[in-house]
Image (cartoon, rainbow, N blue to C red; front, side, top):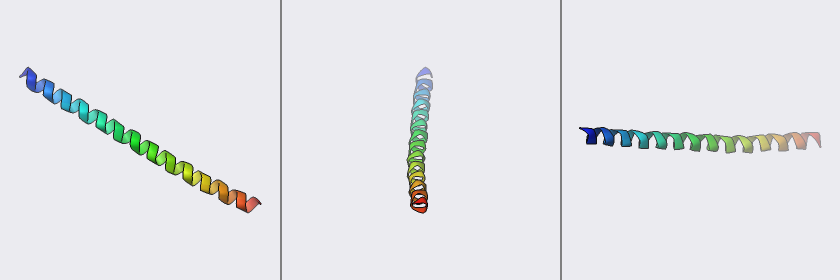
Amino acid sequence: MLYIYNLIYIIYCLLNTTLRFKYIFYFLFFYTLNIKEINKIKIKMYIKTS
């Protein structure tokens, strides 16, 4: 019985870490996307002002 509990706990921990990594990955992905968009906007503003 204890062995099964340990197994479930290990699986749960693995799932948790993978989910966390997925969230970190999404966060980084959207963050880099936002930086690119911000740079585009800056370039457009620069072109307009010049």
